[in-house]
Length: 208
Length: 208
Image 1 (tube, each protein chain N blue to C red):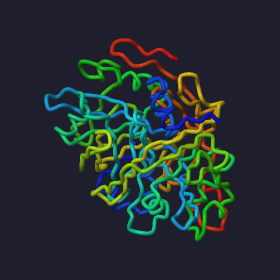
Image 2 (cartoon, each protein chain N blue to C red):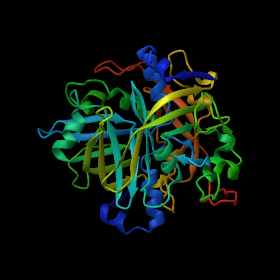
Image 3 (spheres, rainbow over the protein chains, first blue to last red):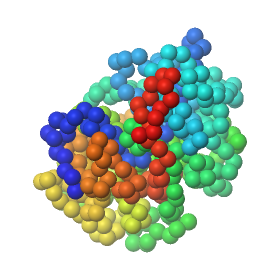
């Protein structure tokens, strides 16, 4: 195995280091976040640092890079307190990637992805996304360690394509064709290996 | 599409709600965390709330459920300040799942996964894992919103199987056979769709 210690990591070429360290978490969630500014300009941005915070009440977290430069999505959320999260499909995952460019106007216009409004939610959903979440900010905190910002939001609405919703509430992400991201720029489909029963000591799990 | 609003989510059957809300992030990273208690008892636990915090210095975060019941991994980290994170392979992903049972002794013994020690790191790695990280606690903070605990750690050592390390520092997770998890209990391989050049406004990304 290749071994890098802390000193070696510190002296790596910055691009090499960024590629390596961003890949270490493994397969990451991929979401398009839709927001709208106070002036009504929509914004679309791609996020991979999205995490389950709690099921009851339903809470989800998004980690933003340091707020030291202009971050349209974060500023819109701090202003309006609402946003959407949208799963990405293989057919338009490149448009999702493209939304991370430093566009002047709305990334919807730039990339050709289409805004959708429903449930009286003021932030735009991404039309065609198989899992769409309407979220409202509960708390945002800056992590002292490097000034990244963790936004924690309540999930106010969930829209799920019927063909991916199982009778026990779980989602069939393979059927939904949800895309995952690794590193900074690589996109994947998932291929199910198995699903296992609740783990108990001494009793080997059963496939469910 | 099926629509659930906040009130409907609140009144769902608890198991249905847990399955649904845990699936909303999409494909999640999967890691086995290795720790050792002050008394020398090793512990192994599976985590999906693992996130990239920063590349320089290299920082990674893990979100723990509320510390209101006994959490061996978290207590070991608070005591010893060190842990390991290990990618999971398809061949033994069920043992990883099994480690989440409430074992009395070490989950290594219980599940049959094998401890590995190297680089003078006091916490156990998982033998055979293609990506192994030695981490040291930098900061832990309790999220007010629901008492989950975010632990932020420095990455002190990275071990990567050579066949998955590309010349630009990125990892080929498909080649490494890294496993991803969705919801509470479903495991997946990844299948690359594409990798795209750095996004710029007005210039369609190129495949790299």
